[in-house]
Every structure is written in structure tokens, then in C-alpha cells.
Image 1 (tube, rainbow, N blue to C red):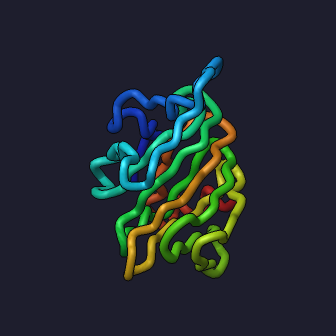
Image 2: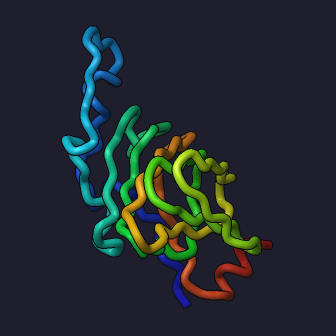
Length: 155
């Protein structure tokens, strides 16, 4: 089976710009209420998955983003080139490291994801999930579609 190419999230959501007050050299801070966040679609293959850039540029390097998952959405097994840390802000979110039992938590739950490690993310039924994620470098998404591909990556 042919492996899928790495996908940059920027391919589908257009130019990513940080919140105005987070830009280098800003002299005035900003405050945005949760109902006024300008969510942008991430990927047509994951309908409803949205993001908002808080800091940095995920197309170029390190960044802090909010991601909004619809209730019941599962990202599927995948990897990222960069390591990241995440924190659940809203909803009940499950993060599963390849070969490990799923870990589920609500607001305030945190995890650290090593670069290149296979994992899966899911927003549990009942309410949408919002997570804050700090990527150490450019944001990408590499789907892992088959058991054989999963096993090759694990080795």
C-alpha cells in the first residue's frame, strides 16, 4: 500500500495568523471572548475540526494553537514531525499512545507527545472538545492507515 504524504494543516486552512496581541512588537494586548474566536477549518478529511492560532505560525515553526473537535470525532492513528504538549480546556478528550491503553480526561488534563510517535485523539460523545496545543516546530499530520504501516513506525 502506498504511504500517504505528510500533510501541512496550512494546505486546507489558508494563512495562519496569531492573535493580534501575540504578535512580536505589539504594544496593546487583546482579549477575545470564547464566543468571538475566529475558528478556521483544519482539514476537509476531518469535518468540524477547527483551529485558532494563539501564538507563532504553525506553517513555519513553533506555535500555540487551540483546536476544537466535534463530539465523537476521532482523528485516526497518525504522527507529527514535531513534539507537542496538550491541555484539555473543554469536553472529555482521549489521547492514545501507540501500544498503550487510551487515557481520557476532562478540563485541566495534560499530556506530552514525542515527535514521530504514533497516536490517536478522540473527543468523546456529549460535548465538543477544545484543547490547547504547543507544537515545538512546524505542524504537520501524517496518517497511519494500515496495521503494517503502524508496525513499521513502532519499530
